Length: 486
Image (tube, rainbow, N blue to C red; front, side, top):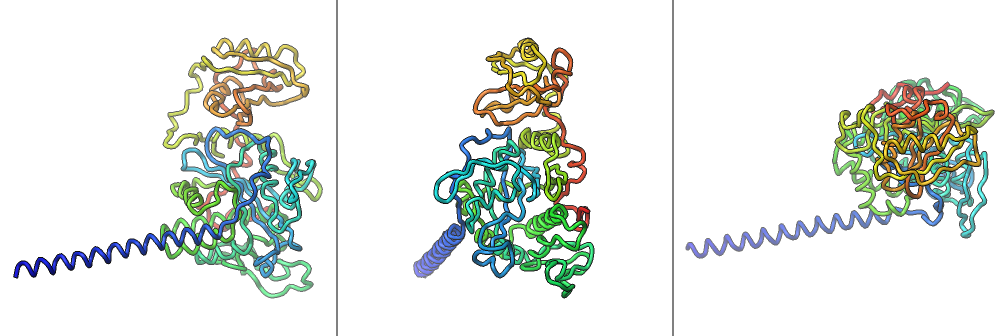
């Protein structure tokens, strides 16, 4: 009796084991199928089109370029978009994820900004010669292909900012529409009633009501209409549209984070997102994309900021405002948030930063110095001051350009901490990781007007302009706040 009961128990255990193993196999196969499905969705662009003269690595953090494409090719035809099949960038922002993994900022670059476009690779393998004072969004159209030229846009952003772009993501209209539907819609706010004629000024009539005034949830085509609308709100400019796009992205991030890790939401979102994306080879798999997304999961909504590059109108175009823009890029290179906090190290506390009055030691650190002013002997003066702090001066020189206003400290790989320490001796200097190796100081007039020896109480970089910091949008802001320009 006992033997029969034991045999029955063993048979039940074998049956349970077989079922359990089969279930695990099915789960594994399902996960494998999911990865294959998502991997099959992802397109990558040719990294051979990236510049051979790129900025060096940043002190900390990651920079991700996000481009919205408005081509009318493929599924985008039924959703509107640009004229013809040539890919065009409708919106672009540079996302800086700080080294502490707890802060991020997206910097919008107006599409009408006049910039220098560096040499870019064409579909036939040849390279352009580059061009000056071109509209920023024209970089994406170099080569006149339906997929656009993300490598050219990345080259242009790196030249504009001095920041190395670690990854680039292009999102098309059709995929964006699907993503908004996958999350069940996104909360937005409209300052006034908007009609079809506001979306299309060439309609010739007011048309039907598209958006009612106030807060509402949008998805699919309506979400596209919201982020693309220019006319009928504020001054009808692209700048005003940028404000609403930042509000929309903030709301979408808020919605996704509020859902948590619910597979019923995340799987459709992942499927829609990967179908809509063209990425650099460094993000060219579901696993790499997931790893990147998971690296940002601990960022609080309030610590996700959106700002716009300092700008001003220049006729019908937009000009970069300097030195304000350089100060913003310098802060990102130094991994400082828009409110001036050092976010370079995960878990770093405010007290972890060196005291401004602490002695600066340059023992074992080599520096080259270039005088970029018309004041003779300035490089020798700086060299003498740095030697007193233990620095080894490898060279002093005079620049062919002798009218630089601001001192710049360039550092190469592995020199970020040394560059930050050195910057304490140069008030207001810009610190950037654009050198191939070592540390190089280019002296500007600001150093010439300072005291004969550098002040050890200087901060590591100029602060972000107050106008930029004060207008920053947080991802947890009310969707109706700071909604429009003009």
